[in-house]
Length: 383
Ligand SMILES: NC(=O)c1ccc[n+]([C@@H]2O[C@H](COP(=O)([O-])OP(=O)(O)OC[C@H]3O[C@@H](n4cnc5c(N)ncnc54)[C@H](O)[C@@H]3O)[C@@H](O)[C@H]2O)c1
Image (cartoon, rainbow, N blue to C red):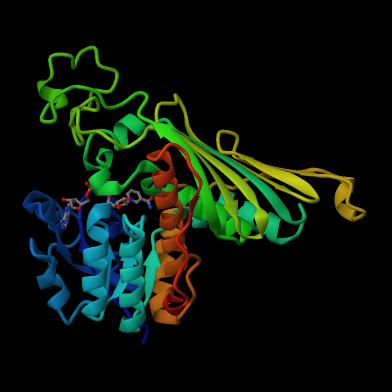
């Protein structure tokens, strides 16, 4: 009989709603429990996902349950280290949302616990499952643009004010920085498609739009500027986006040198009108670039003494159903396949650690005037 994976969630609201995709009582996975510090979120989870689910405000009670095979850590970034390590030590497989942790040391402690546990650990790098980035990876792996030498990535975060500056994300003690929080995806895609990790970085950044001198306890519904403020939000995430405590840069630029001498640059800006990611990879035989607004990947080839120079190609990226352009159903299915069928995940825990390590180094560079910072190498014992 096919095994069914029984899953418990830590952090049931927000990203924790991915539980819906795993809950298939007659299928390969089922949500059987949830832990959260917010009682209302737990009640909604029970009502909407599984009325039979075990719920608790103490995640350790969830981990004690013998009827749970796997834990999904969808709590805020600053909780990942504690929750993932405790779950691995309790003998559970773990799905941990990105970023793996908010420090390199925290990531390394997770890798250590993973190694000792003998259980499976997957990082929530769902961008690796998007048709667009899979296509770009395939083109590069086919050799069509030769050996990659340069990468240029721009992330226009049109929803910066909606998702990042109205709650815990905007405080460095919770996230370290947006380069690490939001950028962990992009740094990972750069690592994945080039096949190389970052060795050293330099970066500049500042708070150019959000933050300011409003009181920390001000919320949009009670603010006398709410009718005229462009950032006002009234449902979830309602803390003022111009409050004093905000200290994570909203405009950052990072240059990176990867293994093999590849040069890469990454811009992340949180106050653009549009929301998309523009990637280009330049190799010895050509260049590829994506356009999310047009749903296309463009391949241009140069003189290469091969058939490739005969034509440039444009790929039309197919639509995929489901959250994050179809990436969410893909990664959650892969989590189950990893546990049941032993399928290797697209993103390893080490990849999770290396993207955090590059983000941490860039943050250190920004906050010390833009100097070059080496990325902390991985202890080979953690491999
Ligand atoms: N891969 C992706 O596409 C993607 C998308 C969104 C969010 N995320 C990640 O998911 C995580 C959660 O983000 P979010 O926006 O849903 O956050 P959130 O603030 O909505 O919190 C999620 C849940 O965690 C609960 N929670 C808070 N502190 C807790 C604690 N100490 N113990 C247990 N539960 C706790 C909250 O009550 C909430 O129900 C973040 O790490 C974020 O980076 C990933």
